[in-house]
Every structure is written in C-alpha cells, then in structure tokens.
Length: 181
Image 1 (tube, one colour):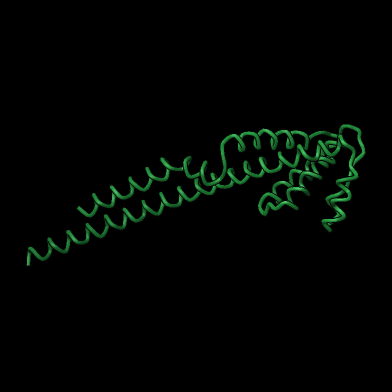
Image 2 (cartoon, rainbow, N blue to C red):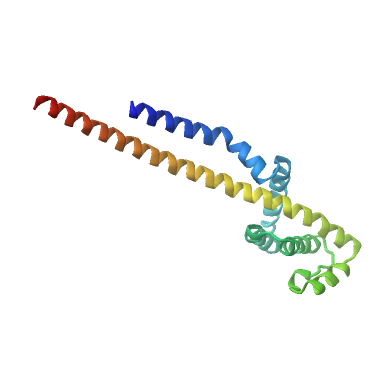
C-alpha cells in the first residue's frame, strides 16, 4: 500500500509539472507574442555578429544583451538599445552616437536628444526590441532551469522509490523472521 501511494504521488507530481509548465511560463514570464518577437530579433542580431566587417560590434551587442537582460532596468535597456543602434548605424554608413558611455542621465539625455531623426527612430525601435529580446532570453533560461530541475526531481524520485522498495523488502524480511520465531 505505501508503495502504491508513493507511485501515485510521483506520477501526480510529474504530470502537474508538465501539464502546467506552459501556463506558469506564459502568465509568469510574459506573453508568447513578445517572446516570439524577441526570438526573431535576437536571431537577427546573432546572425549579424558573423558579418566580416561589422561582426565585432554585433557580437559585442549580443554579449551586452546576454549580460544586461539579467538585470534589466530602464538605464540598462537604454544602454543595450544604444549599443545595437550604433551597430546598425555603423553598418548602414551613418553617424554613430556613443550615448551609452555617458553614465550620468542628463548627459545621456542630451546625447540622445542630439541624434538625427533617423538615428532616434532606430534607437526607439531597438529600445522596444530590447525588452522583447530580454523576455525571450529570460524564457529560455526559465525553460532550461525547469528542464534541469525536472530531471533532478525525477532522479531523486527514482532514488526515493528504490529506497522505499528496499525498506519494504526489509520489513517483509523482519515480518517473515518474526513469524518463524
């Protein structure tokens, strides 16, 4: 009987984790549309990081994304967007702006306000993309963590079931021994 209860508990736990994984993810981490948009933008930036002439800027932007998305704030989002904007402007032969180097908000604001209309529109677009990309990256990390933890829990449950089985066998031997005495 205890073995059957343990088995039922294990099955219910595993079913619960898999059944509600997407529900928890969608409502806990953001909506699917943002994630898909973020995935698309992230893949475009990663592809550009392999370009021979401008790849180093894009590669640095990917690293900035990977690190910055962990602690996303308005300033970090702006830094990342400015970094990506400069890569895009450089690649398309336009003047770049190193506003992300200005750590003081008022200097950064002055730098951003001095941008050409084209550069500011590019920055605004990438500012929005940055949030979506970060949702995507966080979702990736969340899914990887869930998968790793699910495997760990499965292994622990298997060991627990084996230990329970060993205990039941030991109890049977004790009862058998007592009956003989």
